[in-house]
Each structure stands twice: as C-alpha cells, then as structure tokens.
Amino acid sequence: MLLWLPLYALFPFPATLTVLQVTLITAAGIVLYVLARQYLQPSLAAMITASFYAANAIIGPTLSNFHDVSQLPLFIFGLLLAMEKRLWWLFWVLAILILAVREDSGVTLFGVGFYLILSKRPRTGFAVCTLSLGYMLVLTNLIMPLFSEDISRRFMIERFGQYAAGDSASTLEIIWGMVSNPWRLLVELLSPFFGTLQYLLGQWLPLAFVPAVAPASWIIAGFPLLKLFLGQGESVLSFNIRYAMTVVPGLFYGAILWWSHHPQAFKPSFRRFWVFCIGLSLFFSFTSSSSSLNRTFYFLLPDSFDPWVHVSLTKQWHHVSQLRPMLAQIPPNASVSATTYLVPPLSSRREILRWPALQLRNDARQVINVDYVIADLWQLQQYQVAFDEERQLLQQSITVIDQLFSNREYGIINFKDGVILMQKQAGSHPLAVTAWLNFRQEVQSILKQSA
Image 1: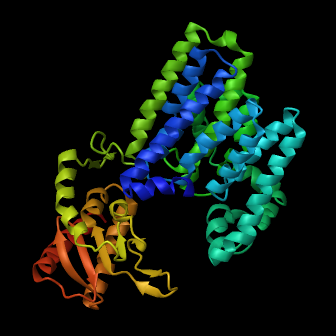
Image 2: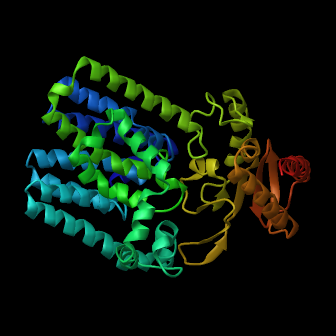
Image 3: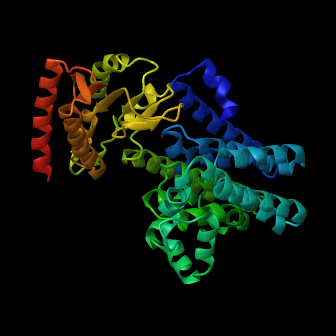
C-alpha cells in the first residue's frame, strides 16, 4: 500500500481510493491483453480482455470497498508477462510486490511456481515455491504475532478452525491438521457441493468455461481455490468479496495457453456462445450487487423483493443532505466510532472505529474511549426488515445508545433523519434527545412487529 501513499498524500479523500482501485483493475486488463498477444491474435486477445472486465469476480470486489487485493491482478499478470519476455529482474520485483500485498498472497504465487516446475523450469519454480511458502510461514508464525497476539485465534481459527484441536492454532498446526486427516480434508473440499460447483461455474463463465478444461488454469488457480474451498464461513464462496479476485489471474493465463493450442475452436458459433457468456456474467454481476455485501446499484435494483426493500436515489440524496452537516460537526483530529457507510467520509483521521466499538489503543498505548459516536440508524432501519445483520445491529445500537446516554458517558448533541451524533462527556441537547426518543419508540415498535 505504501506504493500509493504519495497519491493519497496529494489527494487525501475516500474518492481517491475508489479511483485508484478502478485504475488498478483497468491497468490489469491492459497488461492481460499484452500477455494474451504473446500467444493469440488480436481478436482472441480482445475477447479474453473483455471477459476479464465482465467477470463477476472482478466487478463485485471492484465495486466494493477499497481493498489490498485489487493490486494482485496487475502484479500477477505483470509477473506472467515478465516470465514470457524472460525479464527475470522484473519477474522477481513483481514477486516481492505480490508477497507484500497481504499475508496469504503467497498462495497465488506458489501456484505460479508450481506451474514453472511442471513446465520444465524447475530451478525458478522451486525458488518461487520456496520463497512464497517460506514467506507465509515466517510471516504468520513469527512476524504477525509480534503485532497482534490474537493471530492464532482470529486469523486461523475463524477461517480454518475445523482443522484445529483447540481454540488457537498456528499455520503449521493447521497444515498438520489437514494432512493428518485426509478424509475431513476431502469433505471440506467438496462441501457444500452445490455451492462449490456454483462458484466454479461463476469463475469459468466469462471465459465460456474454457478454464474447466485448461490444465494451466487448474495448476495456477488450483492453490487459491484450495484455500477458499478448505476454509469456512459464507464469505469464501462470495464473488463480491476480494478473495474471489485471487483466483482470476490463474484462470485467465490458463485460458490463454489453452487457446494457443486450440485456435481452430474460435469459430463463429463458439464466438456467439462466448459473447452470450460474457453478457450473462455481466447480468449476474449486476444482480448480485443487491446482496448485503455490495449494494452499489441499490437505486436501480431492489435489495430484496420479498419483503420489498428499495431505497430510491432521491431518498438517499435527501438523507445524505441531512447527515453531512452532522459529519462536519466532528473535528478533523477527533477520534470517532461510525457505522459502516459513514466510515469512508471520516476515514482520513488517525483514530476511527466501526460502531458499536468504542475503545481503542492510541499512539501513546493508552486505552481510551472515542470522542464522538455517529450512527446511521436510518440505514439500518431501511434494511432490517429483510436482513438479519442489520436488524441485530439496530437492536444492539439502541441498547448501547441507551446505556451511554443513561450513564452520561456520552451526550446526544444532534439527531436528524435517523442519524445520531454523540460526544463524550458532553451535555445533551434537549431537542436532539426528544428526536431520539421519538425515533427509538418508532423503531422499537417496528422491531416487535418483525419479531
């Protein structure tokens, strides 16, 4: 991320990160086209590039929050292109950049190394595999615990706890748990069966299912797929979460190699089928945006049809016009806890938490309560009728706000259109308190009816 810090220093706004993310993905598609041209004619290379831009696993995470994995397609396609051009100095620079993205990006790089071994470049392949595997083991077992003691509980147990005996485990213990119980490994790999199959079909769809029969796709993308399939939790098989992007580069490079050996298959009939698959992938990318993980097109597509949940653009604009003056009341250097969709406009500050968390450890290593709380309860109210997560957070928010207000830990200094603004150890404004109590009564009656 430090690569992009100078850009953010010039334009320290949330929109900068959105533009950067789209730029990284756009650049990745351009490098993919150049990579495809090493083997294929322009028309076929263009189709593969169009498939990349239409892939649900690319569109979904790109339209979500800014994340580190948005760098990976550009770096990996660049690494593969450097490999084809025999630019080994650039290959190793990009290998280091890939590892620096996040702690598990070595899984994708390991797949590239394994492909190099099988493609008769064993020395380079073994070096890549050793580097990526060694990096992940050293980082997760030695380096990351220096910064957070919960690495063995949160990072490992949340995702791979089914392979551990206790409530904490290291990377090596998780690997041993997988190796020592192959039957459980096989069950986890195939379950849920239809969910796994649907995920694979969704990843293959924009390329007209060619990766399903492309050996290189299985070799390179197989390792990030294994990481997803062997994990637990709903997010591992979601196209709207960044993890889906890690599979894409291997699938596309394998498809390029397959087409280089089967150019005769690019017939008009298959071309029409391919265009249909691209269109279908775009359609699914659009419709999946209505999930609770990605509401980019909320104003066009209802978030839920039964029960009906749809927030119009004009309604949202009105709501934003009400809450922006409240955001302006929070000093730039003040610590704050905010609900999810209010985090981005407040993110250019040192101390910020996601509501309902209130305590943080500051740079002086003191545990403190945040100075301000701003919670968009209106947003939760709109979606609670259809989504359990919003309903639970709305109920929890009312309980926490009541406690903070009654204990006089925080005062209610503003309340407007379902958005509450509280300040630590401040006196409450009577009009804001009255508005909050009226809203609270209204929401409580709604929650009772939905229960």
